[in-house]
Length: 170
Image (cartoon, rainbow, N blue to C red; front, top):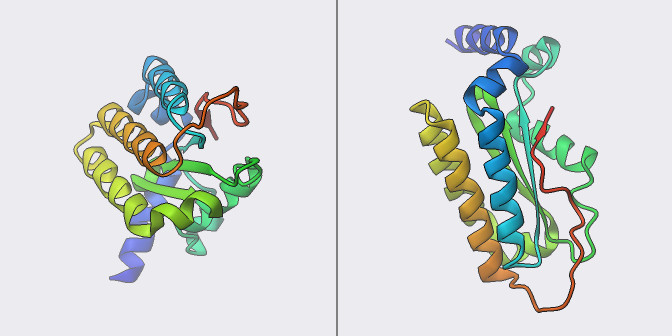
């Protein structure tokens, strides 16, 4: 059974590419996500980064890299951890697996905890399984912003936007 699962995952990663990202999330939807991130960051001091990856290299899939492991790599590569208040949050989508991972820096993760982030991931993944990617993404960005507003509200003043609000397609 495990071999069949591995082969199925390999196949999904082999046939999923950047065009699939833009079919699932057209540029207009990615622009809406960017706007939602910017609007949310006006309510909290957190920094939200959205990264969407179509698939992984086949050798990495064969070796069994988990979406969470890749999300942690992307968190480091995009320097989401490098914010003044340690409140960066990566919202990572791996399209081939229809998987969502949220990686939060230690400053905000301490306040929110695993369950808060995992609930958002489950809701988004449910929408993705139904093929409702734009709706799932919109709901996820809104939920991340709501958690950040509750646990790290903006204290006033001009807080810099340390991470780009523009979604990154890897």
